[in-house]
Image 1 (cartoon, rainbow, N blue to C red):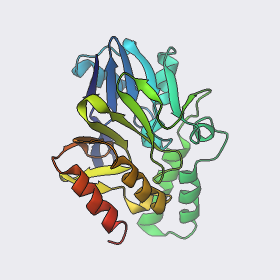
Image 2: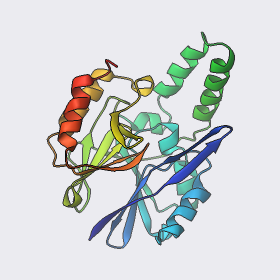
Image 3: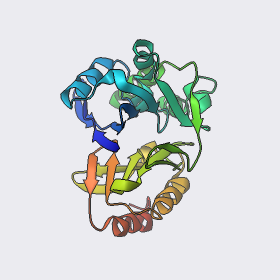
Length: 245
């Protein structure tokens, strides 16, 4: 039997305070975590597991939708304490997660920092520091489009926000784990913020791709669970509007 659990984790830094929403997949006695939050989040993860009654010692896999700091930041400390965990990601993400290639997000932030001033530069400098604090992993297992993670959970390649970004589809509950492809903002389903999308055209194509699936719920990493009986219509509106607004 396979079940999904949303795992709210609170991020706080200076004046910022918001939740992110990793997902835990319970497959019989084994647990699989999809994305793991920021650096230094291990204790928060452990407390969140306890709160919903899951034993973190049963965690066997971590699936990274992509290598951004808020998705893989705690991966290194997690596997250091629980070394039996296998980390998986897309083939295109692998060299970034292993540190063989420099983070595209970091490259962009460094370029932006050359022209910013005042508070904007201060914020960008803090962002760069956060990105540089992420520890690389020693090894990962790679996934391809259509791979099955476990019973009923399928990998969908959804690039755009980041090259090699993946989402997961849980067919029995018609649920999409969207990573950062989609967000839920004040109860409204929306496309990922333009500032953080590296390829807008690919992002739109990925949303078109998921329209081939029967979806009634989307778990957004930013915004949490979103349910609607007209998700396909909403996705079509998102596609039609694109990044024109």
